[in-house]
Length: 304
Image (cartoon, rainbow, N blue to C red; front, side, top):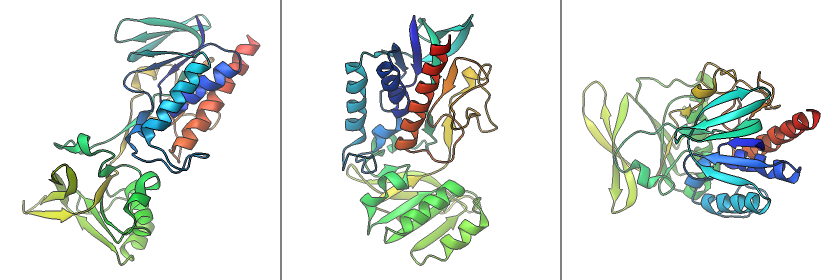
């Protein structure tokens, strides 16, 4: 029986385990793939306090080493359900395991929606990025492509326009879907080109390096190449929280409907990180959630 079971081994989950252990609580972190979450896609992290520059993988390794040194345990399995057992919890996995805990923190993260094209996965972090705040500086003075036309894509494009020599926004719909104010500001930029009604059909490479994309007009079917030193993709995020909807409310987008307190409608169950409803999704805010959720769980345990 663990004091706190953390579902998810990203920055939020590992921070939660760190705070749990340092408060004298036993913690188990269950991660389905690799520890670090989305941060491992960043070849260089330069916005984490105290670290001038390191890769996302290096940051994840440091976090994992730290929680292991503090006594946390880890399991690589896929959680597919929770079951209440009185005031305690049973965390079940696809592999058939069942772990018991007094409290649970869901730090399940999100997945960036990808284009689903051949060669895309191999170029993530090596020419294809999802975060202008994280990776935009690497393309200072260079030409980049932004795929997407919603608010997130337009905001990212504006950030990139202040750094890059040219930003080409590609939207598959015949119009941008972001706020008109953002559209007006973006179109006023002399180094921004907006292309609508074009879907990305191929990722172009020069050897193993990203070179650009091939787009196809949705009406005429004509194709054209768009060159770029890098590409940012902002076509949505995918939370995977449906398995927990019975015990934690979800908003209309599928995120846990919880505020900065990281509480849920169910006593002893907390949420942290990108999986919850929030406006800023960065490694630092994920860590903040992990600390908040763990301290809330500790407070709950101390009152039992």
